[in-house]
Figure 1 (tube, each protein chain N blue to C red):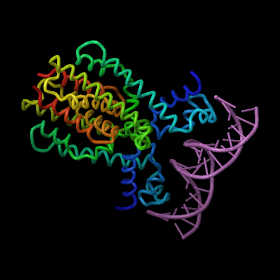
Figure 2: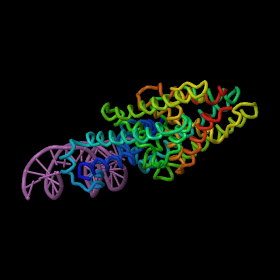
Figure 3: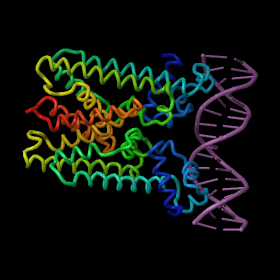
Figure 4: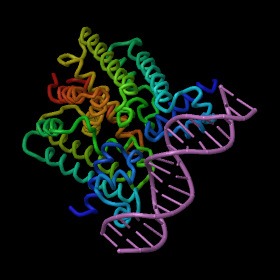
Amino acid sequence: MDTRDRLIESTRELLWERGYVGTSPKAIQQHAGAGQGSMYHHFAGKPELALAAVERTAEALRTQADAELSGPGKASERIAAYLHREREILRGCQIGRLTQDPEVMGSPELRRPVEETFDWLRNRLAEVITEGQADGEFTGLDPAATAATVVATLQGGYVLARASGASEGFERAVEGVLNLLVRRP
Amino acid sequence: MDTRDRLIESTRELLWERGYVGTSPKAIQQHAGAGQGSMYHHFAGKPELALAAVERTAEALRTQADAELSGPGKASERIAAYLHREREILRGCQIGRLTQDPEVMGSPELRRPVEETFDWLRNRLAEVITEGQADGEFTGLDPAATAATVVATLQGGYVLARASGASEGFERAVEGVLNLLVRRP
DNA sequence: GTCTATAATCCGATAGAC
DNA sequence: GTCTATCGGATTATAGAC
């Protein structure tokens, strides 16, 4: 991994941990083992570096999600697999946390990959729900609204877990939405 | 409103907008129309002022939520009223946003009111769900898990709305979870 | 490409006059 | 109580040597 790559990876890590406002160029340089001159040779400044990091993270998240959602099994099984995927729950969502950052949301460039990621995820989940309905699952549900609920449960599950410092809140929320989706009396 | 109060209210506003890391004492002073000496006369520093602000916000949130959840109507109607309450959706949740702040979560004092707020809300919602089950609603659902899902949907709804810069994502998520809860075929 | 030096500004806080 | 002055350190760069 060359210096440019280490800078991007360090930025991804620090954005996840501390957000954009809380991440300084100096901290990135130290984490990457690079000097100031090196960072400013590869990137014009903090915003450009953050954009490279966010875009890489967004693509990784999409790839991971699609692996579960386009895998084998019934629609409900694929959604359950996605929700139960191994996650670093207490660290939160790498993309979702950026929505709390005023400087990210205030920059159209930095915000675009965040918006696109959630748009993609909601659409993909709605497709899977529609596929399930063709098999007799999820009867009577609106795919778009239900997809939004599933994504929101995930994002909110991270909030509950971080609030209590334990993953239990996340797991309860996921258990609850799966019961609502699948075990419909 | 005296100076001390204006400092607390300004801190509440800025914590909501920019979080703890993104809020400087200087910004608080300017927002409150107070000088440095004035702020440091009333509070030992930024952490003490933030604690006063967070505690006041937590209590306000609890009071608001309890007004809907302990109001008139069936359990499902009270939950719907709570979810449909007027909110400044694009500004996000004043308490939930703090879970993304590493310095808040790293301070046991600042984190306690955040954790207590979510504990209280989950418990209160679980009680309401249990009341509904006594009336034949929510059959077959686990109250604790379902309560976690409802709270997570709200918190995640804010994330979806902020990601797209429009409240539609929030409203979809709420619509989806209410359909799952109430219109159970 | 990477390094060190330098700089203007801001940060969180203290001191002391009024 | 509130104000201004001041502080040491961090931030976000730029300049220029190597």
